[in-house]
Image 1 (spheres, rainbow, N blue to C red):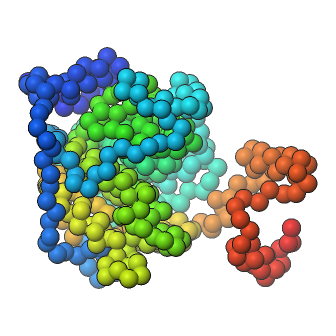
Image 2 (cartoon, rainbow, N blue to C red):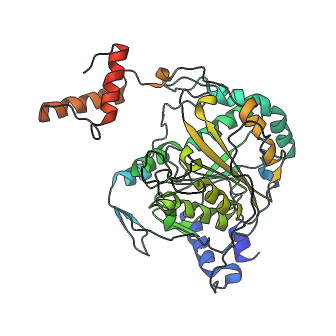
Amino acid sequence: LTARQSMEMEDQMEPPTKRQCVQRLVLLKRGAGGVRSQGPPELVEVDDSEAEIIESDSDSDSESAFDPSEAEAAESSSSEYVGYHGRRPRRNRVWSPYRGPQIRSKGLQKYCSEVPSDVSTGISSGSSASSGSSSRFPETGWAASMFEPLRQHFTAAAKAGLGSRPLRFGTDCSGAEAPWFALKAISSELAAQLSLSLEVQHRFACDIQTVSQQFIVQNSQPWVLFSDLLERLDTGYCLRAKMMVPVPSQLDLYVAGFPCKDFSILNSNRPCLQGPHASTFHGVVEYIKRHQPATFLLENVQGLTMKKKGQAKAPIAEVMEILRSLEGYQVKGWSVNSFNYHLPQNRMRVYIVGVHRRAKLLLPLDAWSSYIREDMACEPQVPAHSFLLDDAEVEVQAELERLETYQAEHGRIEIAGREGRWKATHDNLRKELGVRPD
């Protein structure tokens, strides 16, 4: 085996040890065959072909399921995406080429070194198989409901090898790791409905916010935790191992929700891909190009599909052009409302799916629209107030105590943010509903 081939054999069932990480770092630095790679990176030309940007209607048909067991390992591309802006200065980080980014806050180090073994998030999984869970929130049953119209496809995938090995999964801009909890619910439903065991290996997670990093380490416990996707290429600093490690490649599923601030209609400026957070999107594209996951799923706000004043096209046109220029991928997007999928929340979002040609599709990507728009859709059966914590819950009591302390010290109640039109709207609504004004 060449050095790169031996490095890419990642079928072990346990996370890599520090010794293995160091060995792989040596291989990465030397390149295939033990020789250091030389020469400038190869750039990719943007594909000018015109195609459907994104689907927001229900008149077209369908999408695609793939079988990860058929995905064969392919060498990661060493070329860089032409729009990648590289590293950016970071607050609360001190970069050292030998130690990686050092976190001034010691809060995360505590969570990384002492992860509770019985952490309970109180998060509902959505799976009917987890009805006996200790969740403080009601079960929406989304996983069981969505399973039925896809039963024949899951059965076909099982025959083709789904579950024969772990599903390799990673996230960037991870936040509260919703994809991880969703995959757990799907895995539980497969076990309950088809007696199929699907292990999900959470290869890596990444989030720039310390509070998100703490949540991720406590609950989903990925093999590797990065702080900033712009501070890594082939290697990155792992906050859990406290050392440089190889960035995991050959994923079956890569999920990223790049920042929405530059696209949101709540941003009066809406700089879009010219904004200060656009480099994160380019970092996501760079990961896909370098490490070639079998499938990727990207999420952003509805503002992505809305034209900015004075512009001929909405930002989604440029985003889809960039993603469709990635070699080997077919890409399709959908605009959906969470309210139509079991959640009592009016939340319009854009989801973009990319499938690599090495992944075996059991249903063409264009054939998924009818499933998404019709078969998998279901209005919420649980009201929104059921997801509010009771006054007796520890978090509510802690916040009440903090506000009372603040009032005693300052003589007034603390109000987050500026008082503006939202305050007047809030007061008027309270009057309409007959709720006390204070």
